[in-house]
Length: 384
Image (cartoon, rainbow, N blue to C red; front, side, top):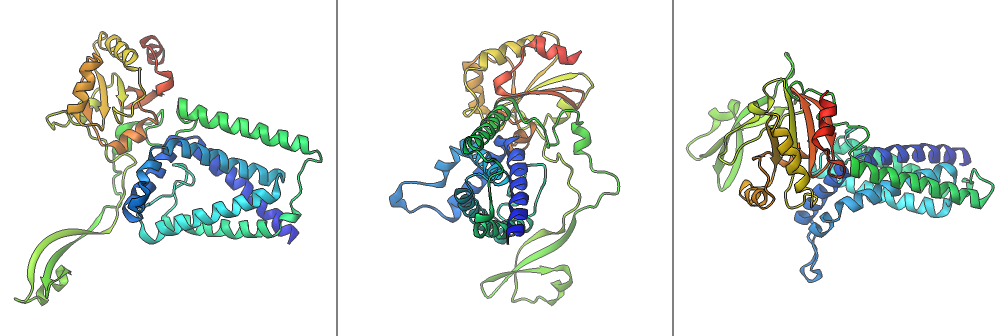
């Protein structure tokens, strides 16, 4: 039991630290996953009305919760590796794994959350894969809990042990807040620096295509049913035709970027206009105007003016309704138009609201977050 406990704690400890740091590298991305869970829970498991509470309240604190979970996960892993606070840590580990196993079991059964976000965007798991991973970790957590008496600190001095935990906490907290403020240190998304957006949108020649079956929907005795092409000859006058649809049988290759489309207030698409040419392009990404970091408008306006004086177009993308954006734009004297884009690609383009992207042609050159927006002189250095 002693050997099994030691192997389990080292394996789980290392895995928790790796998983925690990957998520801490992109806490904003992890918060999006939490918001997805909260939105689903609001529909599936609403709080009783007398509590005057709903899951959307938790969504308002998703960013803070994501930071806490990342730091907590790393610290549990650190404590496992150095053998600190074995009794408390084994309890925390077991309770955490039971909770996450229930969560991933729900995803595996319902398929309403396709990725748990356990390893951020670095490693993707299917819902069933996430569930099986957590089952294995829960079993190892039970072994650690039962064999906690065999876990001894690697330090003979309690003061040194506490100091080691404290230093790990400081480093972890600093890293988590740093990446939140100044963008992920490692970008696993298709809009990372060096990537060509058009190439990321292209389907390779010979790639697997979607397999689609034509299905007819008929009604009989008050019940609707789907009937395939091979069975269409079996129906008679007792069947009532309702509709026809294409049913996906097998998903084909989907390019990393497949939803990059922008429109003006009149619904005219400007995707090709943004992507054409080999000149430098500066793009403001402001996912949601109301949630955007405040008091940055004068700096953005100055940068846009300096950029436009060079004869280049300043692009601004948002998922907010453009009629609301127009009010915001005039209030802050922003002399550039906004274009609409779906929130999903905006979340992937830059993990900040607002954020800036410099491109050369269609290649991403540099990104900036809300806490370090550049002046034109800084942008010009990267253009050289």
